[in-house]
Image 1: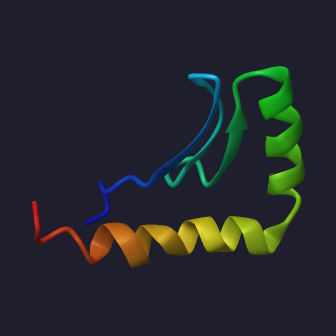
Image 2: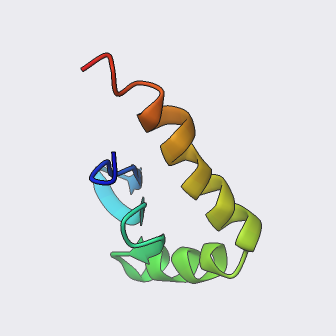
Length: 66
């Protein structure tokens, strides 16, 4: 169960600009717009806690399906 990874990607115009990776534990920006948003989102502890909780809520509940 520890090797399960939750990724929440954000796209605009078919280009990924930011991503939350449960292994990293924070948002990572890939464009200048994404870096600015990632910095803002990483400053909000409730946003980070919400994304981390999604791993348990989504991934761990559906592990038996696959």
